[in-house]
Structures are given as structure tokens and as C-alpha cells.
Image (cartoon, rainbow, N blue to C red; front, side, top):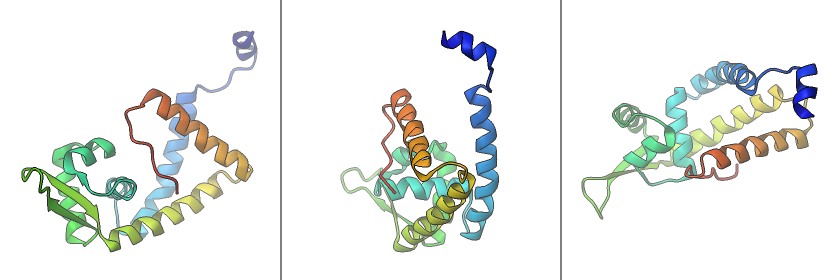
Length: 155
């Protein structure tokens, strides 16, 4: 019954809708991140650290979906700007953990606020409740398909 109703009233595939939406979001986030002095990848790294500080570089690469060799360059740049600190792991001196500095936390908090304001404007046609439901529904889908991914902390 659902398939017949869908055939009579075709809508865009979820992938097409999400692809277009992601493109709009990335375009609107770019000037926000630039204003905060970070690239998209740097923000992703800082955001992951804000949710689970003190990660090993290997775990940070996994959670940020960044190649470990490329992660090092980002961490060098973020460290030079005083946004992250890397420390030798005392339990295994070959490992390094990464932590946000106070400046890093402030940057994430400020950038996240500006991004949330952009998102609220983007989703302005939805009620606040519908916006919340959309975020929760998408998060639930992600948890169901990628249960090994750490769940983000609430904002």
C-alpha cells in the first residue's frame, strides 16, 4: 500500500535531499567558521574534542573521520594557535592524547552558537518542536546504522 502511494506521489530520494541540504549547510557554515578562524576540518576536530576531551590521536582520527597522517597537520596548526594541547600518555609513552585548551573550548562554544543560529534560520519553516524532532530522528538513524560511533553530548 505504501509503495503504491509513493509511486503515485513520487518524492525525492533521501540521498538526493540530504545531499542538497548538506551542500547548503556547508556553504552557510563556511563564512561562520572563517570568522572564527578555523577550517571545516579543524572545527570537526575541535567539536569532537569538546564532546570527549583527552582522546588519543588515533581515536580522534577515527571519531573525526580524518586520515591520521592528515590529522597531525591540523593538530600542529591548532596547537600553534593555542586551541589544543597534546600530551604524552603516561600509560603508553608512544601514544599522545589531545585536549582542548580554554581558548579551544571558547572557540567551539562561540562557533557552535553561531552555527546553531544559522541552522535555526535554515529550518525556520519548521516549529521548534519539529526542528528538535528532525535532529533527534536523524541522530537515531545514525545510532541504528553506526552503533559503534560515540553518541554526541547534548548541546
